[in-house]
Image 1 (cartoon, rainbow, N blue to C red):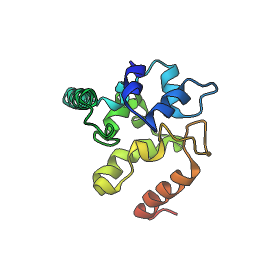
Image 2: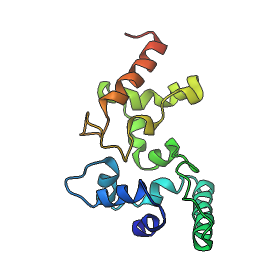
Image 3: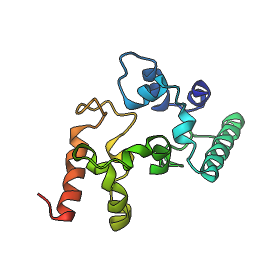
Amino acid sequence: RNDFCASCHTQPESAYYARAQQSPHPDLASIHLAKNVKCIDCHGGAPPADRVAGLLQGAHDYVLYLSGSYHRPALTTNPLPDANCVKCHNDLFQTRTLNNHWHYYLPAWQQALGPKAAACIDCHNSHSTAQGNLVKFVPDTKINPICQSCHLYQGIR
């Protein structure tokens, strides 16, 4: 349950959880919560092995918490891979339209550039309240440089 996750995670996670209870939804995570998506659905890993690793990390952190020998759970112990997003949003990567070309071509871009290419969370930060294209929760300050990096790589202006 989300309140269980929020009970151990301190700032900024507890602020994210409190903010997710608000209406209108101030960030992408809040919209996911309204659709009954739980913290662990995104932060628990996509393939079964990643999910188990996330649960084990949570159990490890919980034992440290109970023993009083913790500083806080690590923020990026298990970063969010695209697979966590694709498990629910795979249709975006199959649809080739002008308004969706970035999703359609993202796998090829990632294959060509490896870790230098964009990932889902580079554009869609679920806990950001930055202004921009709030329909898709894509802050313009992040998306424009990412668009330019792909277009410049392809020689498209």
